[in-house]
Image (tube, rainbow, N blue to C red; front, side):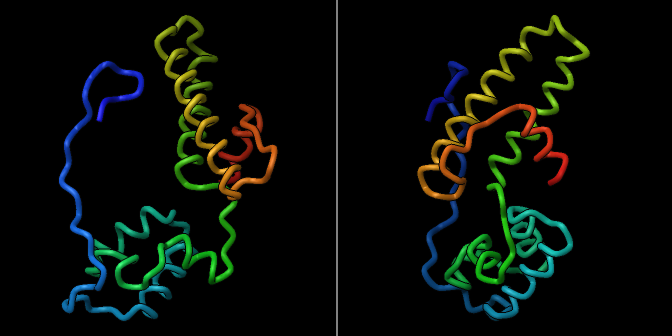
Length: 153
């Protein structure tokens, strides 16, 4: 698939084979994995990092195949509140850091364009999450609010 803004092709990567059932060699049971997900989230790890830790340190190839739920679904069931999706939060962090850079370097036109592209991605992603009900109706991206959200996260 081609890149959205750059006029070049994307990278080809190998994909994990679809697994309906977990492999027999997985050392943990689904209940133990759910407890681990909760403890790792309490330690301050985001859901994507929790998946990497479970894969690398505990030998769990796929939480979804083992528990039949994603990491975020497990966290919501256990009562943890996730205000903003992780991909949206990462884009907002990137935009806030780029705004700080542009305050110092006002003539950096290349990064000014990069900020426009990032903020456009944020708006499109936010529109999707509002449509899906993850974000409240009428939520819009504002750079000042994004700085506060990133500071609190």
